[in-house]
Image 1: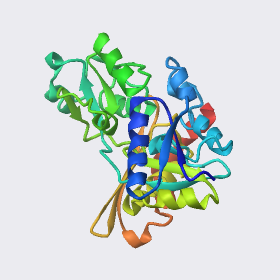
Image 2: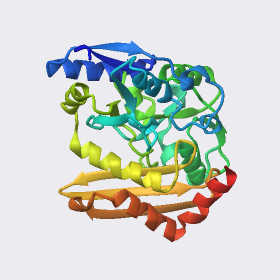
Image 3: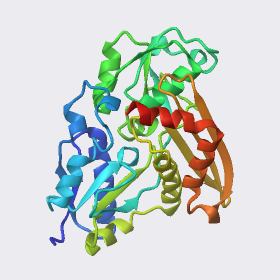
Amino acid sequence: MNSVIRIGTRESELAVWQATLVKDSLEKSGYESTLVYIKSDGDVDLKTPLYEMGVQGIFTKSLDIALLNDTIDMAVHSMKDVPTQLPTGIVQAAVLKRGNYRDLFVFKNADLYDEKAIQTAGTSFEHAIATSSIRRKAQWLNRYPGTVMENLRGNVNSRMRKLAESNWTGAIFAAAGLERIGLRPTHSIELDWMLPAPAQGAIMVVGRANEEYVLGAAATLHDELTATCTRIERDFLRELMGGCSTPISALAIIEKDMIHFKGNILSVDGTQKVNIEEHIPLQQADGAGKQLALELLQNGGKAIADSFKHAG
């Protein structure tokens, strides 16, 4: 192959930021690379809610095709967008050190900023808010039933612009996305009570199987602790047969050789919720995500999971 590694990326500012991070890091390790811009289906249709689009892989499919067609040598993804089953011939090449994994509530403007309204609103929040995420919607409705929820699609920049032009009180974003491109406003708060999507805040690099030069280059970027945590979260998601169209959340954090795990599954309307929280020795990480999912199913989660299967 050409010694210049072709890095595939979506065209959004956030995607380009992430790909540029990979490019710069590769060059520090002595690998020459260039960016190749690929438009994804998720960037073309900005009106249909993600959960109505058969969304698994909606942001990764075009890059997968480019990889398999040898148009690019590696692709860079927000890891939470990547289906738990990679296409045949494509492998995980690296997981970068995780950024902020939390969800962020952004008020429309500074005049509406009211942290107390979000953190201590009890069970009532009498304002319209926006999100395209069925997971965020379900968790919000579980905490604040009856909230008017609006659909908000587009890249980070366009969603911030739509929020500013709307009559909503605010919208929910991934904190990492806003922070990485310098758009996190002061009139925002992290939602400590909202569990993130599996692998939220992490960046994944994928490549073709058996491309030793590319895989070796990507390995210089790999963070094993992040890879372990995100593997547990994604195995949890996979065992529950979930994707972007199901409200499943998971977070694994490693501290002093212990894995602290929290996960949940909710009904779409937020009325049903089953949680799991456990502490696991790091040496038991292999298979932990699947085991945690099975425990959640046995403790009430199966009825919710089955409802999604029947709906499909």
